[in-house]
Length: 156
Image (tube, rainbow, N blue to C red):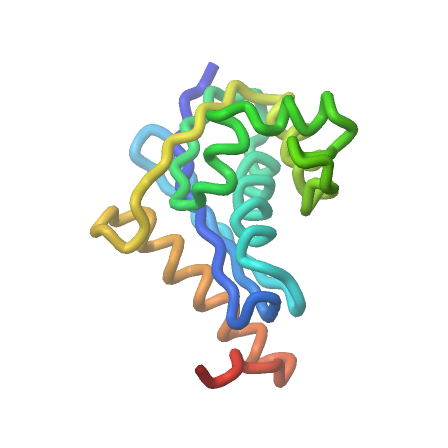
């Protein structure tokens, strides 16, 4: 089974707002960059979508080491929240509906094709591939805003 290293990131201009996602996939020293955007989303959805799209890019079953600065995504799997949510009918321990169920289900589907391990990385801490994903995600937002005349984040 091929071993692929994946870095992902998501960003949002406003939350919710215009969002961007990106991933860098690395195999045997070669890299592939992918990115995209959404007109109305949240940062968590973009973080999740980056992982989904990275896994969809793979043409065969692989052993994947996914690096993410999203505590939300990493803990969902490393702390096994997802299993609890599924067992509770997609409800949290406090019985409220789990957010982003559509993407959790899509992510689980894609993960079923691969062996996936998640690693938490610190964002904006000089991790070159994490920083690259951050730049690609932000560039996807800018491109969306240019082509769609989209909303800017509100002034703080």
